[in-house]
Length: 245
View 1 (cartoon, rainbow, N blue to C red):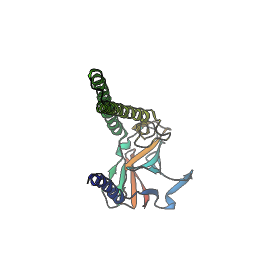
View 2 (cartoon, rainbow, N blue to C red; view 1 turned 180 degrees about the horizontal axis):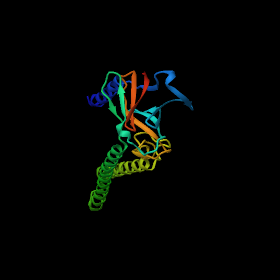
View 3 (tube, rainbow, N blue to C red; view 1 turned 60 degrees about the vertical axis):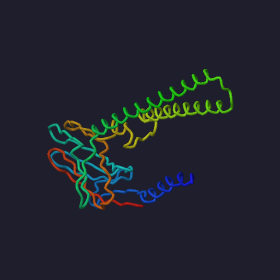
View 4 (tube, rainbow, N blue to C red; view 1 turned 90 degrees about the horizontal axis):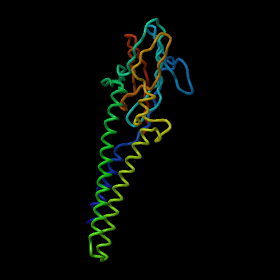
């Protein structure tokens, strides 16, 4: 009967895994005529409006996000303030999805990092307490039977396991913060939002700003429109989305 209790969670996990098929996403301009040029295999769309040039192309997808490359060039005579949080993804037949605000994302990730630090610190203190308790118990015990030895070993192993878990948690957090997890950070890496995402920028005349524009995925829609607000104008780009299961 014991084995049934272990099999139930495993079967539940397998059931949900089978019920959620993995999906590969590809996004391309809706028409060949809308492509301004190709750059290392990427079809780039370009629009000019109100003295501003906007270039965009699909970059990649993660499990949660669609990522686009965006370049905004100021061809006018006055400053242009570009805020990526004003961009929108318009799925066909669905509500619009706002672009992920990098500043909000960074704040959320930093708050989550603090929570992880607290958890790791708690685990470390629990492990230390178990190890100290084991040492005191072993020092004061007069029973040297095999049962006592086995109990001491169990307590010691428990304390060491908790301490190891805390060490791993701390190492993983520090590795993610230092960019050691991946040379090309994904959106779940803090350094993606710091160094690669398109952030709120004042673009001087003759200057360009570039970065990644990130939206939630919209797997149910075949047609996607990216709306970029710049210079008081709404610039739109049409894409076709293909989902491979």
